[in-house]
Length: 106
Image 1 (tube, rainbow, N blue to C red):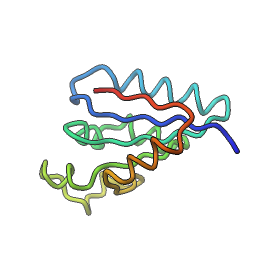
Image 2 (image 1 turned 90 degrees about the vertical axis):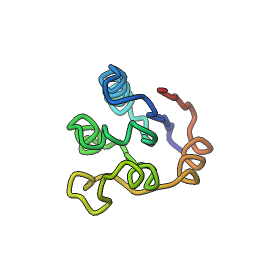
Image 3 (image 1 turned 135 degrees about the vertical axis):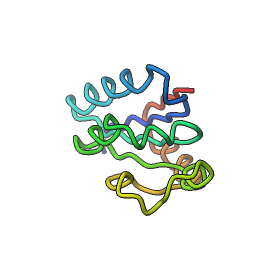
């Protein structure tokens, strides 16, 4: 079984965390580590940012809390969410459980 890095993004969109996370994801994937990212809270606005889409296209699995997206007025059917997986707090719990290492950016 391969190694897996789980990442929770909860930080506000104006935070510099997304650039750090992108670098961590790339470095992990470069050495064959599976990467799974979960986005919730105000960080769901980052789903509209190109950086998360880039991570997903490069192989990171990116999912988000559907309740948080809806609460913030983002349409779940929006094409901006293409490539991301709709999830819940249960999804986050599964990521935590299955990860060898888990990082939270709050």
